Image 1: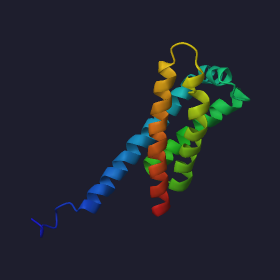
Image 2: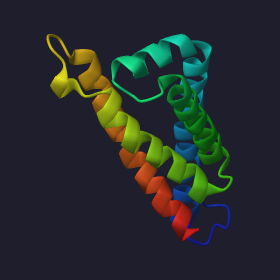
Image 3: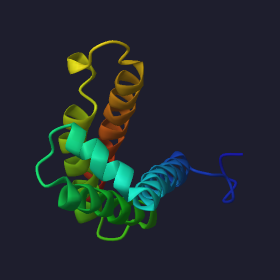
Image 4: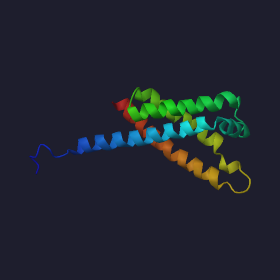
Length: 134
């Protein structure tokens, strides 16, 4: 079996898994951004309620950053810029928009969103490292 040229090497399996992870991660971000664009009025109101300055500009800009960054990660085009945009987006949005520790009453939804973004932030950092290695 070791001499079988059709057998997958660990490196090729790792490359395929990494590619699949990037596609799933990037598409997930891009699809979420497209949902934000479909209901931009709510996104702007939500940003305004969180005290974001100039929410009518910040919300579409942030959604656009997530859309372009997500597509860039999924397609692995300009990966340093794409993953950098995603890292920047998540670093800014996560503690600002999902500050569950400041919520009164049931903050379960914000806590869940915060931890989900935290997990995506970790993935984005791993892909940023990959972008700088390639």
